[in-house]
Length: 136
Length: 120
Image (cartoon, each protein chain N blue to C red):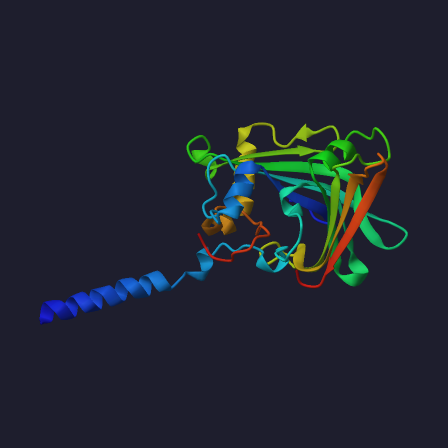
């Protein structure tokens, strides 16, 4: 009986140890800033074209491009993006960096815009624009 | 350390896969980050855009190779002339000292944008 009791105690201690996370070692994702809605592309997997901050509205934005858009953006060959290019503009609210005093990082998404360059059947270039607003 | 700048923290493919798999503490060997800083350039509408390039700093994870500097290789180049920071490898001690408060987070300040807040 005593042995069983000790085993129960031991198991309880182990379970308690597993369920408590030391807050000092928690590494968090910036979950609030994730772009998780029903969107056609994930621009966070693309490369960056530019970024900026609108301090008056406490927002920050980053412009991303898929491979075709990035190739074009870095070549400066012509002003027009080629067919197959997709450019995304993600706009976030800003918040203080939890670990870097004075730094600000993305918080909740405000909007996400896409411009997709396509070629029509007649060979003309066309652009499709889509915008998603609110917490995505 | 640099302040009053616009920065991007970029990750290589290993880093991106680690984020997707929620393996960010510790980050896997092969992870590389680049922190790129520009001056703040306000446009007429009040939007602050990237101005002059200031510096780029790298963290490259290799627990064995960089054992003496917390498992990370550290590098920094300043200005458009890309002048390397420090006169010898000893400069990395400064990097480690600044990042030391994050030793329980594998010395990384950045919290990557992702879909899972759990510690891994």
